Image (tube, rainbow over all chains, first blue to last red; front, side, top):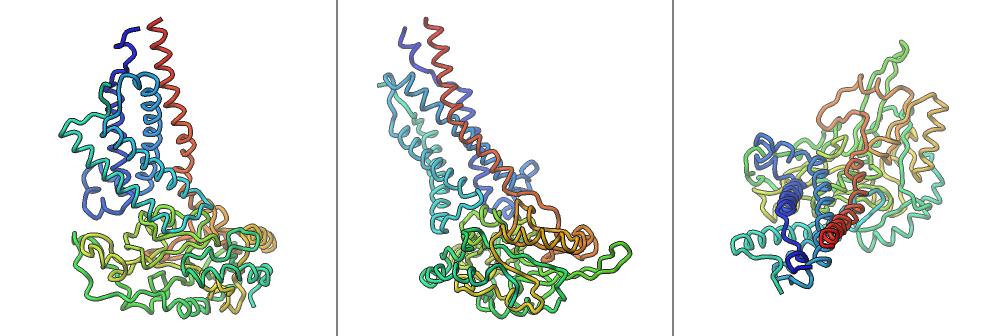
Length: 156
Length: 318
């Protein structure tokens, strides 16, 4: 077995799926706040759905499903193929931690949305702020990573 | 005294929560029924004579919760943002407003050639799984264990999402009051949303909601949801009537029993802003909540795809 065969090469298709998913997650997530109608964004042809809260809510859930599948895929793939060949960079650790925080806070908010789950509103506010702060951090750091060409992993 | 399921038991069950509410105000678990179920109201609308004693009582008891806006209001950007000012119209009683959380809907219904006047006390339905609470982006609306949905005026920013997602569009906004004034008053927020809180503070102190206590006709009862539903069915059977609120929006804690079909009431009533119809309402939260199972399956799928890749790689290298 050659080294090249054991290292899993980045798959552009999955990368684009990740970016596509994160884009719609962020868009539908911000759509949970009543801002797109107020600031005319929902008036742009094709973006009217951003002002429809049940649609953005549903799309956010669909995005979360794809993100969960992608995350577990990448983690499993890393441990199966790449752990001996590549190591996580600071960017890798940072992004992983932020996405983990987003998933945990998001899942707690999903549970809250079932009947008979009564969170204290201090917890709801904490989770909401946590979720939006983490996504801002991810977007900001993502932009910085794009400009400075930071990668998640590097050869050992 | 209004007829109700074991008032003594109801009050006894409320006593413990009263201590909590005294200590923590709005954060009280506030009085579930003794069985731990959500508290539900049952309204026999054949008894309502539209005397508006409930409306008077509601306004009197909740007056200190009503908004006291600061004027002039901050200039809003962009200019399309609507100002909602009810402070000069506090005497409006024929619709829901920030100063009137309960009104009487009246309809002259003709059934089998017979004219019947029905009067319906209308307010927040206090859904079992309230979208106003669950979809509030800021956590200012919440549901007490008693099933009461409450909007915290100290936290609400007045974005009106709760109204948009409510099947009956119950909450009403007052501009010029609340937290948004301290943040970015021109750019974000627009006041506070107000609606019936079913006198959660009175319930926590072992008292009845004002509208129930004041009603001379005993239109309303309050008790554990299962018992109220059983009573609603018994009453509907007795008067050959119709039930509304049991299944609407996945179930509410306000059950109406009417001697005439609700479709007929809807046809005979005037509706508009602040006057919601008693329409069919599907479970608002169901479509998203129903796909949560896929969230549990998604990680398994992710692992399976990676394992499949390993298998294919192994086959290729064999």
